[in-house]
Image (cartoon, rainbow, N blue to C red; front, side, top):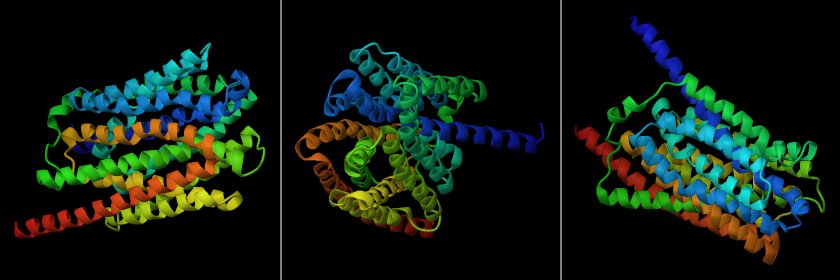
Length: 408
């Protein structure tokens, strides 16, 4: 067979795989943020308070973190492609269960299943994307934008479906679309089980055991703090708009304003995708997390338009750091066990969502969103401090690596 034809076929398959991974990232974030918007209207349906009903989503977000660990392990040992098929089809079925739930107990069970299948994407999808794109900054940034679009559109689309049809449609319509995507994915992408033993077992920049422990410990600290900050902002955003932008804002308007704020994250990721190809990613890491702290600090004290601007800065920073984080981690992680490493990272990142929901529920009852956002600013500062430590360590590692390469 003509080598050029083989290369073209491989390139086409790679582009198709990346397209499905980008769509999966959008779906992953969209489906988990349907409930935080719909719950505003469910207070009247079930006669329960916002604090009580928002707590029901804890099952989904806890599962989102916990099941990332077995997902990454299975993907590395079995098949990354088949795990992504389970993500699509299982997620679609879970959405239908939530949308058709006859009571709050079944709804909570459906949310747990949704979180379990949604947990597959990040450890598995990111490992696949790094492999397919060779960690190219623009490709990772665009994938991040797709995830951001999922977050951004969740509030507006869910509010529209709930207002113009009913709250169940906000789950059923996406559920049908996600299932259809899963069947298309299985049809159009080849099995990859034969690739598992061919993956590289040496990282681009090898680390000593002591340096690896310190570096990945800092990564875990950043993941935990970033997870709490991210989830507190995205989960509470529609209600923050509802309470602090105006006395009474219609659900559709609250969702639309929240969407505009979240779009800032997508713009930031496109911008950072260019910057990481020109500047050292670990240096940009510090700048971005510092900006995120300032945005969160401002959000704790501002109201009205100033509050929205501060939230936009916070959202932009938290999304920009995700792209940088993935690139930096990929450089020090071998492809053969990258799924497991990302699983641990995303486990700590997303298990913190349960903590975020508990904090929102507790702090909102005691001091409103002023107290919620002040606590978030403290956590954002802790993330900034951890990033400074990580950047200093990476600077030393890269200097030693450069010396070794020069000697060779």
